[in-house]
Image (cartoon, rainbow, N blue to C red; front, side, top):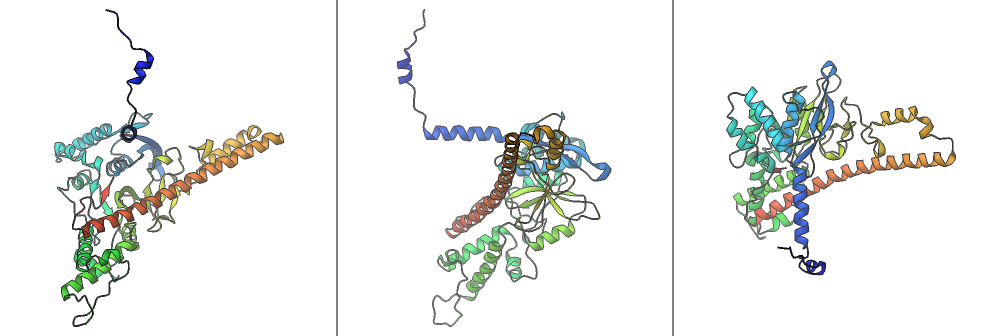
Length: 410
C-alpha cells in the first residue's frame, strides 16, 4: 500500500502552537541537564615540595555545594583522584561512585549502603540549623544523615555565625542558641505585639507594669519582646552569616594545613589555612564556573565578614591578575610575555595596525573588568536574596507557619 502524505498546508494546520509554559519547561529541563554535569578546573595545591597538579570541581547554576565541597576537599587531600587526566567534566553518578569506593577502601566500619542512601540528599541541599554559640554546632532537621556523611569522610563542618559573649545580644542568644529558635521567638514577639514587631523596624516601646499606657504586657511577655529585639538586631547585623568574633575564632582554632567545610551565607565552601610561618590567613576555594578558565583565581582570602575586602589569589597564593578577553585562561604575566615574544605582531609599525592593537587590548581589559564586576554583583545578589529569605521566614512565622527550609544550602 502506498503511504498517503498530507500536503504541506495540511501538515502545518495540525501543528499546535508552543505555549510559554512549554518554553519555560524546556529551559528548566536544559538547565537541569547542564547542572548535572560539572566542569573541572586544573589547579596546583600544596606547599613547597608537596605541590602537585590536580583538578577541582566547579559549580554551575545552583549546584549541590555540599556534595561538591566534600569531593573537592578529598581531592585536595589526595584521598581521591579524577581520572583520566584529560577529563573535562564529571557527573553526580561518577563522583558518588568515586566517593563510595573511597569509603569502602578507607572506612571499613562505615555502612556503605547507608552512605549511598544519604548521598542523594546532598543534591537537594542540606537543612542546617547552626547554633550561635559553637563553630561546630548544628541541629539538623530530620534524621541528620547529611551531617553523618561529613563525619564518615572525616571532614569537619564549621560556621562563623557566632555571637560575641561580651556583646549586648549574648544573653538573649544564650536562651535560644540556634537559628530556628531565634526565628520562633521573633514570631512569638510579633504575635504578642499584634503584628507590630516584624513590621516596625525600630524597637517596640514596652510600657512598664502599672503604667496607664496601653498595651500593658506581663513580665513574661515583656522579657520575650526584649529578647526578641536583641536577637533581631543580631540577625540584621549578621546577614552574611559570619561575625568578626566567629572569623577570629576560626582563624585561631583552625589547624594550619587543614581543609574543612565552611557554612556561610547559605553556601558550603572549602576553607583552608596555610601551613606557613608568614601567612596564617583563611582562604576559601573559588569554585564559580565563571572562573574555570582563569588559573590566576583559585582562592579567595577572607579578610572581613561582608566580603568587600576579600582578595583573589592564585595557586601560589599570590594576588591574582586575570587577563580576560582573548587571553582568558592565561595570567596577565603570561599574556605580557607572549606579547613580548611576538612584538612584531602585537606592536606593528603601521600606525593603523598599532591603533587596532591598542583598541583590542582596551577591549580585553574592559572584558576583564566586567567579569570582576559581575562577580561582585553576584555576591551582592546572594546577600540580598538571603536578607529577603530571612524576611519571608519571619513573615511566615508571624502567620504561625513554620518554614521547613530555614537554612538550605544548595
